[in-house]
Structures are given as structure tokens and as C-alpha cells.
Length: 128
Image (spheres, rainbow, N blue to C red):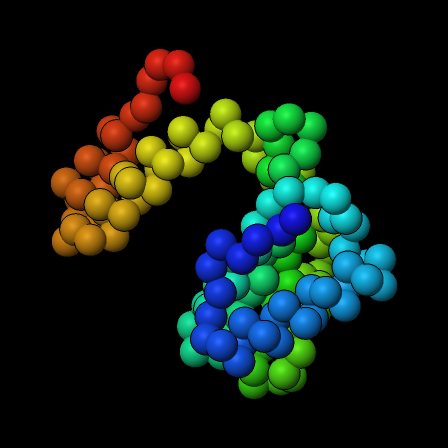
């Protein structure tokens, strides 16, 4: 069961869901029986990404990425050179969460030299 963690508008959500259902049914997205989530990410005005993430082997997140560029086409396509593959171990998410917070602080800053130094010195140590 792959649940939608985040989706766009109703029309986009329906199209994305129908597309992924067809991919699974046709055997092009090998996630049958896996648990996970789908993130529908709008990147800029014209590009939509579908990140299909599943959990495997007790602690690994696997991902397949599809892209749709509305300037070219109104359908999703597999991101070039992408298959459903291991991306990150759940134990690494503590570091990713730390980096997310540090980078967000930097992006909201003046982005000057002291802000860059603060980001570079924001280290995470210890056990996750």
C-alpha cells in the first residue's frame, strides 16, 4: 500500500494516481506489496515530479522518480536513468533532518559570509 504523502490539486492528483496505477498494473513500477508513500512535487511553474517511495529490507527507502513538464507534454515519464532503487536508510534520516533545518535557516538568512559559516559549522554529532 503506497499512500499519497503530498499531492497537488484535485485534477493533478487524479491524473497522477491514474498514471501510477497504470504503471503498477503494467509491471513497469515494481512495488506490489510494498508499503510507502508518493510525493507529488511541483518544481517551478511547469515541472511536476512524482517521487514514489517504498520501504524495503527493514530500514531502506527505495524511490522511483517520474517527471512531467507541462511545456512539452501533459503526461509523466520515468526520470532518465531511474529505476526503483535504494535511496537512503531510515537511520540516516536524522542527519537529513538536521541538514534540512540547517539549510532552511541559511536560505532564510541574508546568505552572507557569517550565514555561510553558521551553516558550515552546524554539525550533528552523536548517535541517531
